[in-house]
Amino acid sequence: MIAALLSLAAAPTAPTVEEVRHLPPEQAGKLALAAYRHAPISEVRPLPRGLLVPGMTELEMIEHGAPFARRGCLRQRWIVAFRGDPAGSEIAQRLDSARPHPQVALRENGCAIANYVGVNHGVEPATALVELARVQAWRSGRRAPRYRCFDQTTSGMCAGPSGPARELARLRPWMVSREVDGFSVWFGQPGGMVTILRYRPDDPATASVERRIPAPS
Image (cartoon, rainbow, N blue to C red):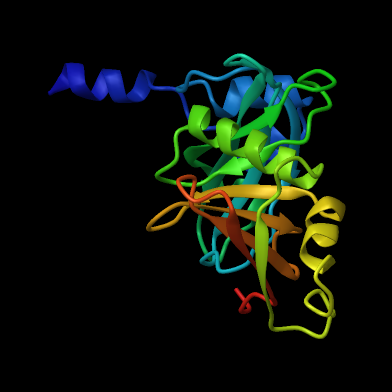
């Protein structure tokens, strides 16, 4: 019993959100992610409160990207949560958890400035990279499929046969997800108007492009 109490007294105190915020990104990552394997952190930024419960704050920590597979880059995007008294000050909230979310990119101009895309649950990063390369080829006009177009907005994307291809070439992808019988790649900005490309790798001649405004979170 005495040994257990001494061990508890010697345990390090979890850092507060204020302590982490005041450090440079790499040092903030070392402090907040000390219990996890991680690459050096290059960026730390607050996340919108959204649906967080009172007494909770989240920070986003972005790793330096590193070469991955034959022509890709990989990094983790960490969501670091701090929790405290709902009626107390935010600066006193202490580290509660950290969750990694993988991101991949095609290694075109180096991993430091690559355009990273999130990898949703159920998709391995290596698989996401293969699909990202496939979609990038379509966006550049190589063996592009015939697009079925669906538009729930007034953007006019489906007004002409070249509309879907033009929009996919203009927008940046931000998420690769698995569908029941294939994959989907999400374009645009998270939280804004969404353009979704859906396709089956075993039927690359056709794909669908849907545009809609997401439901409020």
